[in-house]
Length: 208
Ligand code: VGL
Image (cartoon, rainbow, N blue to C red; front, side, top):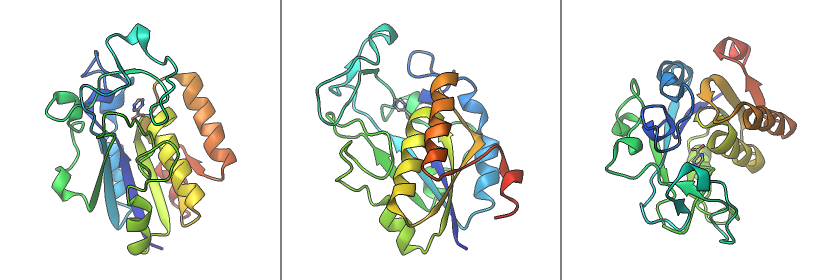
């Protein structure tokens, strides 16, 4: 069995260290748990949001967020976040340097795209980022996913990997945090329904 650990968007923009961006409660506390899941894997992948400041979906306050957009690859509004060159783009404390990962995916670089999952650049899921192909080329059979946020990018990445049909997909909740309790609960239900294994922590994975 070849395992890949996937660190989904473990960036300061999704932590209380960046209160003006998209702070996820305790988002900065998952570094150790991500390292522990990587210790079970042969490969470690990092995904990072990398957004331009002038993206079409950017609004200037949290109150204006989550308004539906008619744009085909940006579904709702968000405040600016994860802009390369700012603190929010950087990974959370305790993780390896970007160059120490086996593979890295940057997503949402184009100003008119705001993908959630790490497998496709677009919401229609036509334009591959190459993540699935890379995992297949490495002979990966199982992926263990953690990161930020459980209810958006972790969920969508897990669903895309599951849908590809190539992998057993596990989401490690001890290495993930969600934006809100209700959407996180719903995300877990949706993932389970799709056949993804939802593990509370790594002890649940000892029987793999
Ligand atoms: C995310 C909301 C907006 C995430 C990204 O990484 O989960 N959530 N952009």
